[in-house]
Image 1 (cartoon, rainbow, N blue to C red):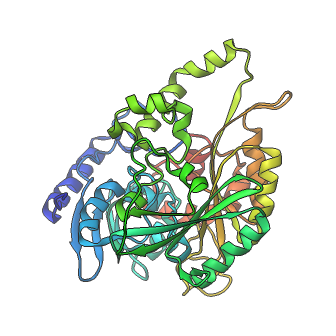
Image 2 (image 1 turned 90 degrees about the horizontal axis):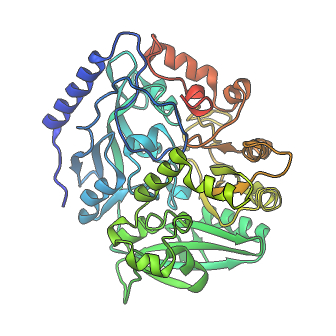
Length: 463
């Protein structure tokens, strides 16, 4: 069981962070000094020293009776779950990949199969300490002095500061998860079923605690309905030779431990590990089990992006250049079938991951937005569609055309796009979609000298 860090060690880590801030030349831009990331936006390399966050990787404290945890900003969900799950607790939303950090999921966006009832990760934050561009640590909480920072921080991607400590809510869970993989041959029926499950939190009389889905083809889509349970006759293991996403097509029911359910997508990075050969039976037998992880694949892909070996080999074989299409988008549930049909015709990438969500905050007046930097409407069910890969650049087209078409279509359907990967919006459209005016006001207050890179510059200009 991972040890707790404790408040004294945390305070020492924050002092180290502040010292690294003081060591950066006045007026010079700042970024985190870290080697790993779950972002897919290439950015310019910098020779400038970064902010030292090396001491902010643990769980500070755990309040089991009140089901809360104080967690450092660079703590991964894997390390947090290692502390909470032995006590029968997990975060309300656990993003799919082990090495996503708490701070990253809040200043960016995270989502998972409990999001239809628990919203997004930032909605379970009780309060957080934010290290601002001015070098201050402020405690932001709903209704407090820094309420506007608290509300604007999600989806700001470090443009307003970095979370050093987050107090989050937890939920009690049993040891196992029972799964039902339900097939649909009609996308409209699929959408209506998602809507009903979100409203009723059950399907055919059985409770649904978590739900996500996979579209393998327009006439072959599945919803995986999960029910927490304390009983299991047998459990499956998808951390070795077996691949989880294939089981969805093969089994009607399944059972996993809670631990394995949380990380069911990480072992093969959903299905993206096949691009690295990791799903080939011979390769998989030789691939050490401890390296069947998303962070390993991410580093390998990073090397490819840096050196372009496969791109050069494809060029020698006469294959056309390709455009990277790695995106997560949300559209209202009544438009998801329309989006999927458009995507099949105009992009043609399979499979597509689906995850319904609804904002947890119901206290916001109608017509208002509780999280302005990613303005989803309270009371509205959305469906996240995730697709990750590359498509050939068609004759006469340019790199980026497909991603631009996705952006236009999502906007037309009343949705939004996450900003962890490539974005092509012009500045005025970006400000309209992500409430740039409010973001600028908050940034002026907490980063008056513009030490932190702005959101548009990060997301679109890749700085």
